[in-house]
Length: 88
Ligand SMILES: [Zn+2]
Image (cartoon, rainbow, N blue to C red; front, top):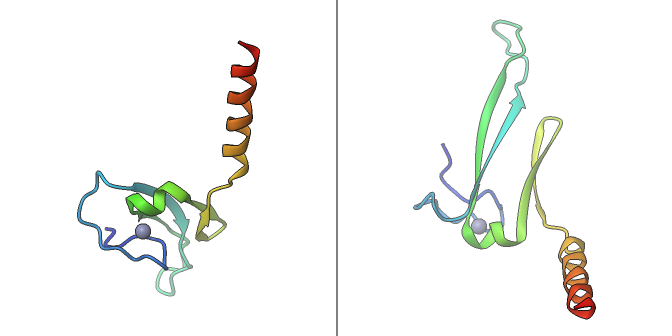
């Protein structure tokens, strides 16, 4: 299970699950030397309350990345709100 915030620059220890966000990824495993079979593993990641406000996690191929949320989406929402108040 998860012990720390997935943001490597933060690493805050996990005490309360209600704080922050849990991400679940289905990651392909390395081919095991023993059976030669390709298996998958479910990995859990946690971003603490502070990091989940500004960051997100995404899976690409066989890795999981922590990245800053796009600020453009916020900008679009703001413009839409301005337009609404202007129209009314
Ligand atoms: Zn954090």
